[in-house]
Image 1 (cartoon, rainbow, N blue to C red):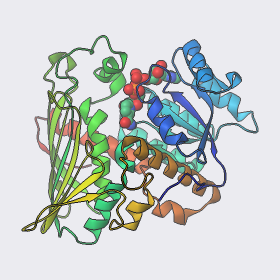
Image 2: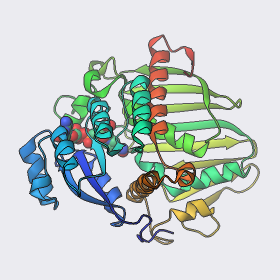
Image 3: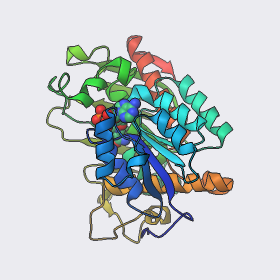
Image 4: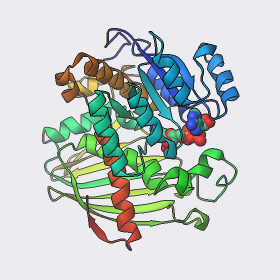
Length: 392
Ligand code: NAD
C-alpha cells in the first residue's frame, strides 16, 4: 500500500508546458505528480500560449515568477543554465505540438512526460524513441486511468489462468458530449480536436481509444494485434475527415478476437470506458464509472464482484493501493500512480538500474508508439473502405 513515503531519494525538479488556466488536462497532471510530495516538485512552467495569463496562473499556484517563461524554448535554455534547473517536463498542449516539444526537451537533456496521442506518425514516435535512448532519458505517456490497480489485478488473474484461454477482448471508450456540433466552433479545446492540422489523423480514435487500447495491452502483455478492420464516420458532417465514431474488429496472434467501439456521439452516455476479457472458463470486466469493482464471472457459478483494497487481491494490485478499504478511489489516484512510476523510472534511469526499469509497469515510449501505430492502422483500414489490414 502506498502512503506517500519516498520511493526515490528526493523529489524531481519538474516543469509543465501547457496545462495552464484554460487547459482541460493540466490539473490532472498536477494532482498526479504532486499527490506524493516525495516524487515531484513543480518549479517552472510555460503554462500557456498567452504568456501573461500563463505567468499569472503560475504565480497563483506558487511557482516563482522568474521561473515562468514565455515559451518552452526559453524555459529549456534558461533552466539549463541553473544548477537547480528542471530535470523532467510534462507536455500538456494540443496534439500537433507534442513532437517538436518532446524533441526539444530530450535535446535539452530532460526526461519527458507527454500527453496522448503521442504524435501523428510512427516515424515521429520511432525517432523520439531513438533520441530518448541516445540521451538516456525516459519518455512517459499519460494514459490517465491506466494506473488503476484493478487493471493489474486483471493482468495477474489472466496470467494465473483464472479465466482460461483468452478468446474475446471487448473494449469500449465512448461518451455523448459531442452528439451535436455544439462547441465545435466555440470551445477552444473541442475546436482543435476536429481540426486535422492540430488533432492529427483522427478524433476519437486518438483522443479516446488510445487509452483503452493501452490498458488492454497492460492487461494482456503477451497478446499482439495481428490484423484489424476499422470503420469510422463523422455523424456531425463538419468533422469530416475526422471521425466522431468508430468500430474496430481485431484478430490477435494467439487466435483471440476483439472489438473496440469508440465514440463521442453515444448520446446520453456520460462516460463509458469498459474492458471485458472473455476466457474459456470465465470473464473479467472493469468499467471506469465503477472503478473500485472488478466483475469476475465463472461460467456456471454466481458472478463475483472483487473490490479494491481487499486482502484477496494480487500483491501487485495491493502495492498501488492508496486509501484502503471503505473509501472510493478513482481517476486522481490512477494519475498519482502513473506519475509515481514515471518518477521511479526517471530515478532508475539516472542510476542505471535496468532491473527496476524492466519490471516497472507504466506507459512508456513503447506505449506511446503503440498508440500512434494503433491510430495509423485504424485510419488506413477505414480510409480504404473498412478493409482488413495487417497491423504494421
Ligand atoms: P486545451 O486546449 O484545453 O489546453 C491546451 C493548453 O495548452 C492551453 O492552456 C494553451 O494555452 C496551452 N498551449 C498551447 N500551445 C502551447 C505552447 N506552445 N506552449 C505553452 N502552452 C501552450 O487542451 P486539453 O484538452 O488540455 O488537451 C491537451 C492535451 O492533453 C492534448 O494532447 C489532449 O489529447 C490531451 N488530453 C489528455 C487527457 C488524458 O486523460 N490523458 C485528457 C484531456 C486531454
